[in-house]
Length: 278
Image 1 (tube, rainbow, N blue to C red):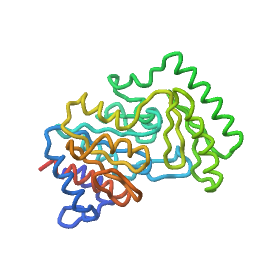
Image 2: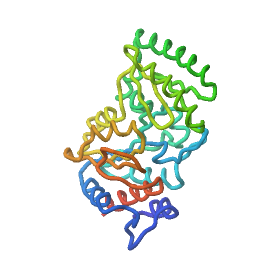
Image 3: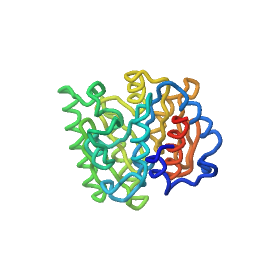
Image 4: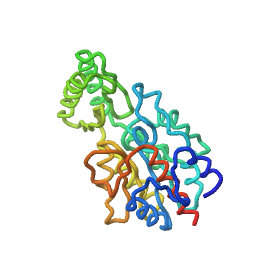
């Protein structure tokens, strides 16, 4: 591993003989397989995967060392790196610290936005979609008036209601009312951890990752995620097609394999870089 990788992952990795000991054998074997391919997309969700959950979403930051490892991976031949999130691209850029000089693609709003010009079409709304979005916004404001502790987030092609930090019964009622708006024509609802997002363009993280794979002509995608919305990506990136998907944390999943915590995500990134440098 290069000096940058050693420094980036040193605090969070528990190693034995240079191999991250926390990683299950199936994860290490999967990383070894995809790291040996000619061209790989290395992609990760942000909240709950790269960055611990916090009560105020704008306080979220990547685990120390995570971005240094992603930057090191992005500098390797045949590796395309992407951060994927439900957040809009501008917020994702701000919280992650990705700059114009970083060779890291940003995919926001569950795939409806991208920092790549050749993937940004999903954020361009026609007149009907703009009307639906305005109507959704007004309806979600009404929902929030009944649940004033909930928070609204506005995105270019969606609106979302967040309930993180609220009592369980209060959050459940607010999310149920917001989710009911997904029954409208032309509205696509996505439920995640403490959030319901209502979009007016059909997209998903999986669709966006497959599009990125095609654009960069990659052999496979390695994707890490923790949330319900990441399951859509896992389903579109089957191991039978050569992909490696890694669920972070507990819960049912269709991912190829699993790690137990956010610190283990750093182990995955460090192991990928180590294998790629062989």
